[in-house]
Every structure is written in C-alpha cells, then in structure tokens.
Length: 95
Image (cartoon, rainbow, N blue to C red; front, top):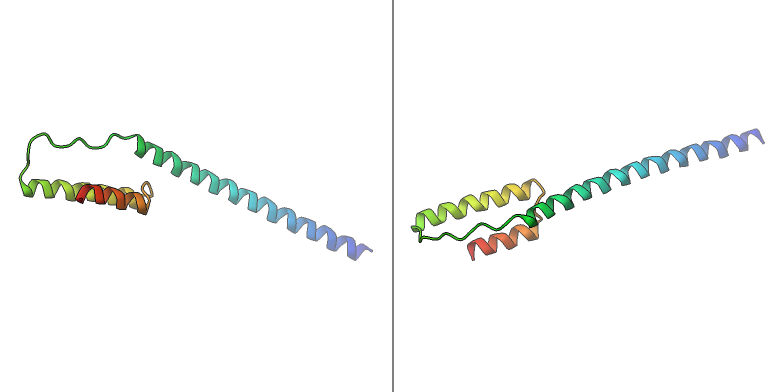
C-alpha cells in the first residue's frame, strides 16, 4: 500500500507542476497577443500620410515611395504590420 500511495502522490505532483507551467505559458502568450493588438490599434489610429499638394518630379516621387516602403518594411519587421497589411499598403503606395 505505501508504494501505491507514493505512486499516486508522485503522479499528483507531476500533474500539478505541468498544470502550473501550462497556465503560466498561456498567460504569457495572452499578454503578447494583447500587446500586438494594442500595437495594431495604434497603427490603425494613425492618420494616413497627406497627398502632396504640388506636383513633384519623378525622381522625388520615387524617393518618397522608397522611403515609405522602407518604413512599412520596418513596421512589418517589428511585428506591427502583418504580411497582408504590408501587401495592402504596398499596393496602395505603388498602385
């Protein structure tokens, strides 16, 4: 009987530890998702860049587009933009 009780107690300890670790991982992941959601909301709330008032030369226009593409790529690399959001903004910019 003591061997059976020891086995049951050991199983309970292992199961409790696994549950605690699983809960901690779940909470950490939920926190990361919340951070990503708030970052996406911040990006959504930003006003789009105003259209240029005066016509620019082709070289100036291309330089501005390249700079905007770099900014979008940086936001994507930081995880602020998803691949779909990046593609949509790129199409809007180049299209």
